[in-house]
Image 1: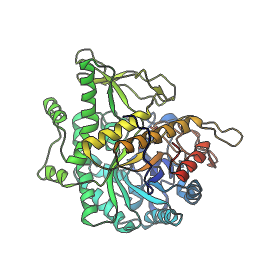
Image 2: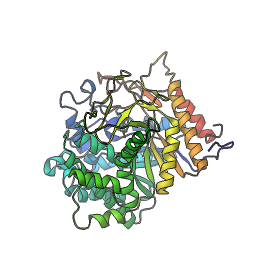
Image 3: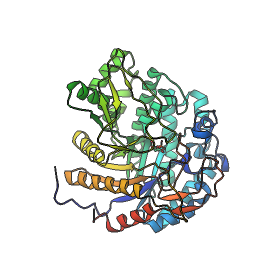
Image 4: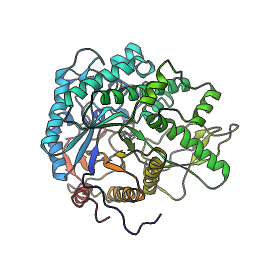
Length: 478
Ligand code: BG6
């Protein structure tokens, strides 16, 4: 539908920005913290770009006051960040580490004092190493009780202060990279295990949502899903079918469980045929059905376009572009399901991520139609090379990216979607898990690079001032 007049963003819209503990904090062993799986994984040669790690990251642990001061000047309404489980419970369970809890208490108080709504992600991938060693982390059902126990500590500590909680960040990404592509910890390639691990994560997500509601916590909770809407390359029915397969296996497969508490029919039939379906224990089906997230967090970066990919002679998995050399991504797919092809209508970043603002509108419409749930955009942004020139960063390409995506949200709201907030990825520049420091996302430039010896100086980019205007005007001009 083409709208002549767009609806306004709600007055209490959460104009925010986001980060994750491992990518910004540094201080991996300070004040009682012990290793997470990421503290160790980054030390395996060849796993990250030029061996980069988050030992210092952008030193947010020591500079959070300076970071919050700049947020205030920017006018941020909300800041989404994650809590490192191994700061709170260094061994994943047992004694609470007061030193770790204090850091987040201070950060949350600082945000509230400055009029910024804290949005806490309970899990952004940094599982305590102790739990990986003890029972294989997400591979064991034991993780469900430990995750709920850890979350309950935070619910009690921040009840009334934190009103928005994200349960799991991108369950679809951390399970896939951890157990299919072996690019995240624990670095395995085992499809059967992947579906089982993912099932445990679904149960943990449901259990923590129920705990939140049982405790009558003031506020809202929901998972953040990395949603990549799937397109067909053309109207050839086989290509349309390939796109349907991808949407079923990569989107419905997670969101249906979050919202309906059931795996989607076609996906489950396919997994049963392949002998890959997760094993259900007594009570699993009931637990999944009983949990109701208050919102769906959506991390939106791009769409994907599909063509048919036959079982015989079809293409399989390939590696991601982590080099920042445009055009180096090869075709990849799953024979018998789909293959991902280039969309001729869409521009790409230097890391070959597709730039598609209309895809965000499509994403919001699909979610609204199928799930009827409010959405919080928990991530959206552009990772690019930035250049510091005379103390300034002229990132007009980021402004263009963000502005077109904000406009797409406004259109989706006019279409009937309920969107409660928009969090850009990311607030400051930070460590990209596999791409080092050169792939920058922030409003605030940080002098840090692959040498990991930068001065850590903070410099607001042009996009910072653009966002300031957007927030001030509630994007009325768009
Ligand atoms: C999301 C994650 O997948 O995308 C973030 O939640 C991540 O943690 C972001 O940094 C961008 O991805 P990348 O690979 O460009 O850092």
